[in-house]
Amino acid sequence: MVEPSGRSRIPRWSRRVLAVAVGLCALAGMVRLVAPATAGTTGEPPGVRRQLTFLRSALDGGAGDEAQRLFPEGYFFLHALYGLAWVELGMREPAGERSAALREARWALGRLESPSGRAPFSPDLVPPYGVFHRGWSNWLRGGVLSLQPAGSRDPAESRRFADDSAALADAFGASASPYLEAYPGQAWPVDSTVAMASLRLHDTLLPPRYAGTAERWLEGVRRRLDPRTGLVPHRVDPGTGEPAEVARGTSQSVVHRFLPEIDPAFAAGQYLRFRDRYVASPLGLGPAVREYPEGMDGPADVDSGPLPLGVSLSATVVTLGAAQVHGDAPLAGALAGYGELAGLPVDTPWTKRYAFGLLPAGDAFLAWSKTARPWVARPPGPPPASVSGWWRLPLLTVLAAIGVAPWLPALVRRHRHHRRLRTGRRG
Image (cartoon, rainbow, N blue to C red; front, side, top):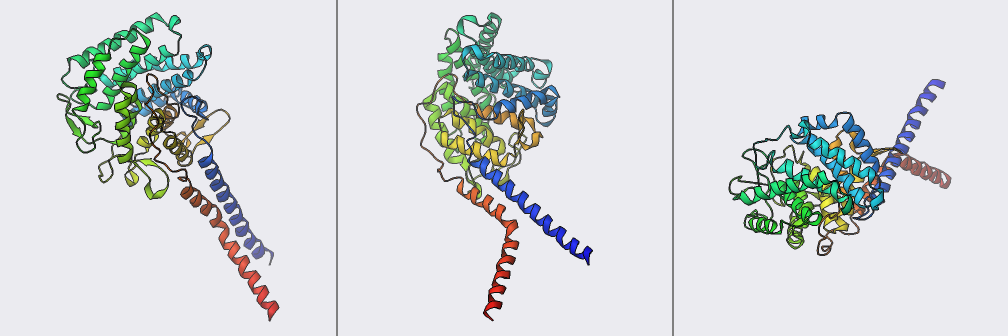
């Protein structure tokens, strides 16, 4: 008789342990959803330094080479975003306390200039290695200079920044299209947007030279907007710059991170168009960013990743940074809070990683997005809020239901037991 009784108690205790575990996970999710996950453009985002500690360890362990096997610019992007996140942390610190940020940003920049950083790109393009490599490298190089007081900048770094900026400006000046090639015969407007922002950055750090270049570029961009959305297209004809593919969330999210540095007024109008057509709330459970505009579906690729319900996780992460640069604090905060729930972060006293650290590139994009701030020009003013202060309520309701669900059978049994006792007493 003892063994059957023992066996009957074991499942009961197992169910209780499972119920407690599910309840604690649901409670942790609710806390993550409510706790602030960003700090705007001036404060330091919680957990980002620990993310960067994890990323540096991953990069030292070969994460760049692993990322390169997953997508064409994996090695380059992982190092570039790591360096840029450090620059933006350093910009939040007093000038005399930026040594760590400067050291890490310089380290990342050196990796971009290495054979591995240049391997996917052609030296025969104009400028050499193409606008993707040159534009992102120039932006990071300008960031390194920005961390140094004007009177004590490294002369060699200043000369290199000036030379690379001149090469980009010459390439734009010689092109019939506002969009330069990133690979032979291929051009994506987002890459030229980053490069043009780096010329604007040049004119804030060194004697200004490229205002006319930027104005001509903007004129060409305005004439070649995607006819379906009125936004900068995803891909264009490399010779003419005419749209070849509808605007897509993965490139739009980056465009809107950099366009305010070039022309804040034009950027503000473009951002509202993007937000209206691409930011959605699938199943009513928090904001996310579609890869294709509302009412249109298309194939996924290596940039967008899988598209559940039309949503691109990469575009959603990067839009967090774009929203922050545009002063759209409600959307930035909502995207960051949703990421703290859906991203499955693992915290230790020393590191923080998302999705169990299985994809360091995702951590790099998120760290870069959370540290987003304007470098050159500030937007004309925050846009009207598009996210209600109640956006968390459906998710909190779902989490509460998940936490309570394992206890329901026991509660029902207890209710029935008390009811039988009451009925027996009456009889």
